[in-house]
Structure formats: structure tokens, C-alpha cells
Length: 70
Image (cartoon, rainbow, N blue to C red; front, side, top):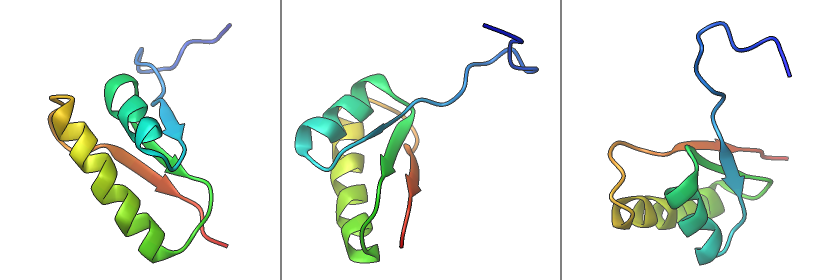
């Protein structure tokens, strides 16, 4: 596939889902997590769970988080 990204880097990989296993997968294998829909309170709770798994996986910094509200 082409053309390659101009910067030579890969696009960010985000994993969705709302279970503990989804947060673990995102922390172990991705650059962050995406929420397909919900409330701001649901996002806050999910971010906390994701950050916990991110730390357990030994990842530095913060995961990228993308959310859709409607």
C-alpha cells in the first residue's frame, strides 16, 4: 500500500471496547483507546481504568484517548 506516511512513522493504533480486557489490550498493544459513544461520566471512568492498565503494562506517558459523544 502506498504512499507511505510523509514522516515515515506509522499511524496511531487505537483499540475500542469497554471491558477490562479491552483496556488491557489497548495498554499492551496500542497507542491508546477509542470510545464509540457514551456520556462524559462514562469517559472519565473508562479513562481511569485505561490509565491503570497502562501503568500495569509499564507504559510511560499517557495513552491517546478519542471519544465520540452524541
